[in-house]
Amino acid sequence: MFARPRSNDERRKVPAKVKGPATGALSWLIEKCLDSAEWSDLSASTRRRYTVYRAIQETSGSKSLTTIDRGVILAGRDKRRDKPHAVNTFLKAMRGIAPTLNAKLLTGANDEVGFFGWTEDELARFEAKWPVGTRQRLAFDLSLHSGFRRGDAVKIGCQHVRSGELSIRTEKTGNVVLRPILPMLAESTAAPPTGDLAFIISEHGRAFTKESYGN
Image 1 (cartoon, rainbow, N blue to C red):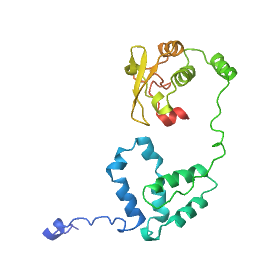
Image 2: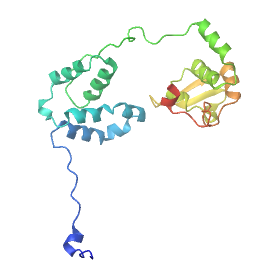
Image 3: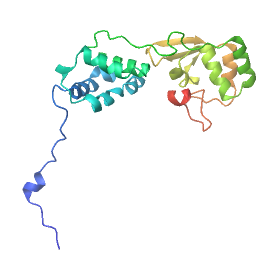
Image 4: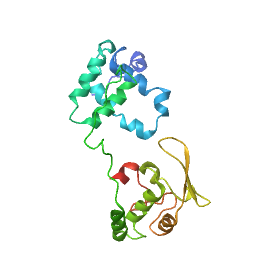
């Protein structure tokens, strides 16, 4: 009817620690890597890209490091060959923890030609479709007339304007980059619906993340 009082010994009991990966296993090395100062120094976007480490832990985490050689890496690459960009992310992630020994990256469908560049006619058609004062035109002008990557474009706001220039420490390199504010860009950033701390804002008035902006 009543619970039995716990003894002093029971009160002093400490929950057992969750057992981590075995020393010398691939998961053990990955955890060491993710806990390193070098990892924490990487940009947030780079760390997100290497969620592949968690997938590797799930599929091969218990394997001993002594069994992982170039042949194993190549087998992992070839198993994923129908997704060349995923393969290359896998290889780049493994370079820091295993002997990839210059395992060749794969070529994707569009890698040889790169991204398609718009023609002057296509630029003019977009400008006709989306006049100054639309969110689409602002994003277009900011990209076209500054050349910043999307990760920087979504952060640019009034605080980055200095004496007719845009000044921002870029996400990818960490360097401060200056760009002149050309007349077309000045016109777009002065027209609604622009924000203050971020020129490009959503219909809810919030800044975009790099990923949502890309979508």
